[in-house]
Image 1 (cartoon, rainbow, N blue to C red):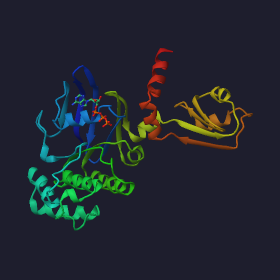
Image 2 (cartoon, rainbow, N blue to C red):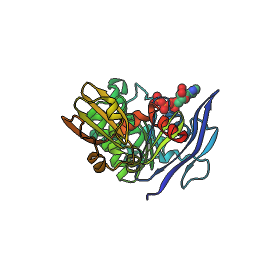
Image 3 (cartoon, rainbow, N blue to C red):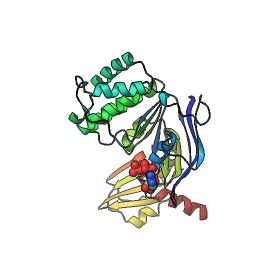
Image 4 (cartoon, rainbow, N blue to C red):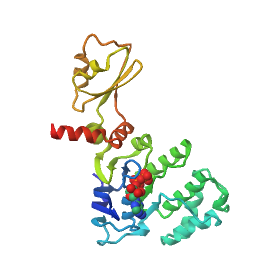
Length: 311
Ligand SMILES: Nc1ncnc2c1ncn2[C@@H]1O[C@H](COP(=O)(O)OP(=O)(O)OP(=O)(O)O)[C@@H](O)[C@H]1O
C-alpha cells in the first residue's frame, strides 16, 4: 500500500451553535486520488479549509507526514480553493510566476512548466493576456495551473470540475490522474460522480459532517453497491416487493427497478425468481457511485441501517 502523505483524525468543527464536522478521519496517500464526497453543506470545504489552516478545528489532528507536528508545509502543497478568483488585470504568466515564487520554486523552471501547461489546456499564446480577458472556464484552468506550478507533493482540489464543460472536465481528469501516476498525493472534492468513479482510488463520503462511507473504490462498490434489476413488463409493485432480497422497488409505467440487498448471489437470485413475472426486458446492473450518493444524500441508506439496527 502506498505511503501516507496526510492524516486527518477525528476532526470536529462548529460554527456558533451548529456542529458541521462531527468526527471526520481519513488518510491521503502518495500516488493516489482520494475523493471527498458529500451533498451540499456536508462539510467538505470546511474539512479542506481546516487542512489548509484557513479554519481551526475545535478538535482533532491534521498530520502532514514527514513534517513536525502542527506544521503545514505550504511549499509542498498545491491548493485549488472552492472560491475562484485571481487578480483580474494581471497577465497570466505573471500570475503563475507569482505563485511559483510564493512557493520558492525556481522561476526559469516555472516559466517552462507554465508554457507547457498553457499549451496542454488549450491556452497557448495567452501568457501575456490578463485574466479579465478570459472566459470563466479558461480562468479556472489558469488557477489549476497555479496550484500545480511548483510540483506539489500533496494536491488539494476543492471542486475542480465545477463550471467546466465536459471536454475540459476530461482534460482536468486526465491531468489529475497523470499527477497521481507521478506520485502526487491528491485529495479532491467533487459532485461529478461519473468522473470520481473513473478516477478515484479511495473515497470518503460525509453527510451532515459525519463519515458515512469510506474505503477504496472497490471496497465501497462491494460493500454498498449491490445490484439493481430493471424489468420491463406489467407487474404489480407489491408482488415485486415481496421477492426475496428486494430492498425497494421504483416503478414508472411498465418499467420496474428493483434495488437488491447487498449480500446477494446474483445467479441464485435470478434462478429463484417467480415464474409468473411478466418480463419483456430484463437487466441486472451494479448500482453506480451516483446512485450510492443519492441514497446517502437522501438518507435512504442511513434509514435502512437504522431500521436493521433496531429490528
Ligand atoms: N464561515 C462559516 N460560518 C458559518 N457557517 C459555515 C461557515 N462555513 C461553512 N458553514 C456551514 O457549514 C456547513 C458545511 O459547509 P461546507 O462549505 O463545508 O459544505 P460543503 O460540503 O463544502 O458544501 P458544498 O458542496 O455546497 O460546497 C454548512 O451548513 C455551512 O452553512
